Length: 241
Ligand SMILES: NC(=O)c1ccc[n+]([C@@H]2O[C@H](COP(=O)([O-])OP(=O)(O)OC[C@H]3O[C@@H](n4cnc5c(N)ncnc54)[C@H](OP(=O)(O)O)[C@@H]3O)[C@@H](O)[C@H]2O)c1
Image (cartoon, rainbow, N blue to C red; front, side, top):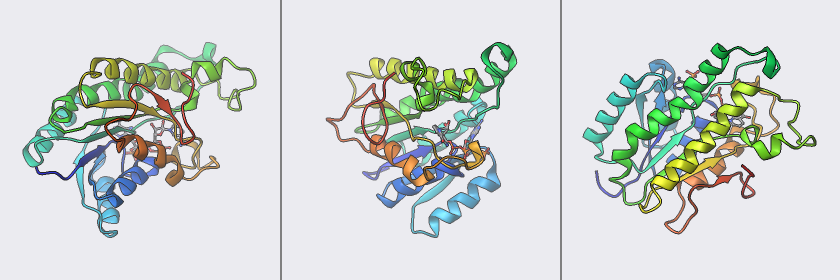
């Protein structure tokens, strides 16, 4: 307990999530490194601790409500609150064109990318309400923007990936609806678009670094009280829904 902010980042053992944890830690925030694999999570914690960051491993599989409940109990016991939740964990499946998909592919990607964000947000909300100024950041993508996907000149128009892209549209819906529910509280809920970053998710094909991708999430996670809620942002500004 105390005044020190506590942040939980899901999928923080690598990629953009690890960089979010690092950047928050460098600002003096205590970071809880959510990872579904204990060895990978502890390795990430050790890398952060070696840089002087206050980090702790939390076992979290966003598909498994039991691990989420255990994490919430342990955070309640140790810190009594949660200031920042970054719903970063996500998967990308290689998919055929929309008409070649089947429901099982869509269910698989939604289970992590959409229902995982819902489970985490719902379960952590009582702890976020105990913070003076809770912040929820949902990792979305410009690929989830219906406005951009409707534009034939969209630079990523070749990524016609129904499951992943619409899962990020679903993430944006969660942002809007939770922000509306929480509008009369100090809690702010926003979606972050990190841009196309080189990570395991895309075989390191993105032109941006995970460090660059993390910056917008860190900005939204540390918004001042007068900051926006219910928005969708990249590092330049608002992204169309
Ligand atoms: N890279 C990009 O260009 C890009 C662009 C836009 C948005 N994003 C979004 O940014 C977020 C981070 O992506 P990334 O590029 O850093 O990908 P990444 O390197 O593949 O990392 C994904 C993270 O999510 C974790 N994860 C997956 N399923 C999980 C589950 N069921 N429970 C808990 N953790 C789980 C992974 O854990 P394991 O190590 O155990 O697999 C890993 O830590 C994702 O939401 C992604 O959609 C990425």
